[in-house]
Image (tube, rainbow, N blue to C red; front, side):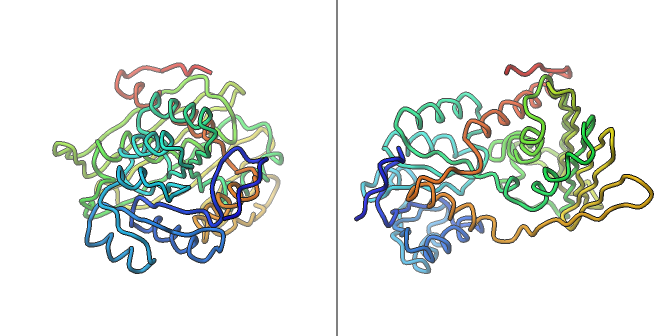
Length: 336
């Protein structure tokens, strides 16, 4: 085994020995990437359903592990990758770091901002990699927005709306309060785009509505959060999904003193002057593979990653401020 360069404080072997929690689409994409990259080896997998997990292990020639506690306790793993329900993230991250494993986790880092804060501090103390995936920062849409901001600056108002009709609403964990979390935490990327573009948030005013809540399960949700940034920009995030909606929407509009930007997943427009100027938006394809390769670059070569756990943690605190605002019906100030 070749050691990791001493310039990188994380420690792993080459190939990086990987343990994977989850067997869904994201987990499979990561497994395919690990299999195709000679710098990594998928060693062990655990998942929610034993039969599905065993089939997954057979496909990727990995060992079956009954549960995540047994997985993170293994001595033959350098990296734990967490692609499972949101409510389990914090506990798995903490346990893996306590056992001196490097960690990759899909957002959110935890549903509890305090637990997330403790995990970030623990990773620093142990000198381990903690990477919270934020694919929205790698995608063509976000980078097209960043590249175009100067053309309309200064931006005084931005609105990002994503509405996803699902009829009927699936009986999945993403429609359960306890497993998915408050929607702006569970779907943290909706706010992370804003904090990456405009920086610290001064205050949050939010409203939330849920339909046909049957205990822990809901059929639809609609959440709205108005963010006032310390730079003076006002941002509005709208997130809805489920049976109540009949038409989908995915649009990011930014209003500046020198023009307006309108972006959808397929393209963008700069409105300034007599005719709209079309703006190209790059593809979203292959982003999980790219994120996985960048993690290996970090571990093997010490290459910086595109997002820090502190940045993800900050957005999680903003999401929690939105939750509290919706609960009490008042604006909540954000500590910076």
